[in-house]
Length: 287
Image (cartoon, rainbow, N blue to C red; front, side, top):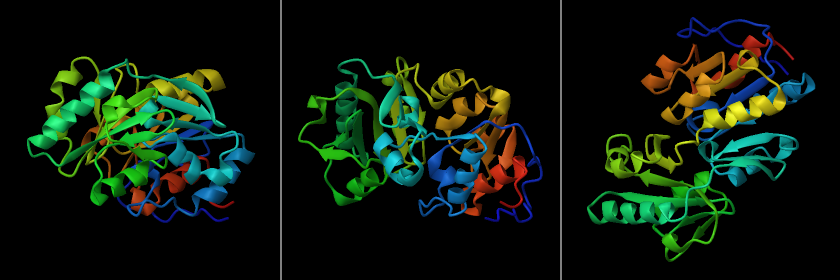
């Protein structure tokens, strides 16, 4: 395999390797995936090389565990997944950690979303359980978004009556979530973490839950330090995860706050910034 990065142009601070990296963690949407939601073809042989070298690779996403496991099905054996924005961490189908919401919180959020929709907001709730994601909005435009991120989802008559251990509630807003839905959830922000995880998505979870907390737990379990950890992210739900790594990279297409928080800048998701940066930092111009 050849992973010879082209000149990186507008990304002048990208360091060259080899570096002592033992753990690589990447967000998915807007980071590893291009805008067509595809994993770069260069990642597959690169993942094999990382495994050969003993470097652990972990996807960390707001996406559901079932969705992530399906995307990496051919290489998932032994791989850990930080799913649902850190509220659910799984390896080989076995739960490593989770941070479920207290009873009644999901129902309160679902009712709040109903009120927003009744007031004219084009928004829908996804109640994220360990077994599946649950929705009661049934129009195709909304369900198309749900299918992208939640491989295991069920349409139910009433999401306030879901019988599952709920780990977060995600809200999809067809407008700009950062400026509309997120501010409207101020009552929950006082007691829970309300995170803008994409242009149209807001996740509500426990204050103790985020990708960074999940990553630090895995670092302790694996005996890997922040100095040996490389992290990639593009949006506000990646901030705590970036703080857990000395080698933190914001994508060139990242939210301005992510660019400010990260130590380095990587090429954009559409320029395959994740595999190019991994190859560069690990000193792999060709495999």
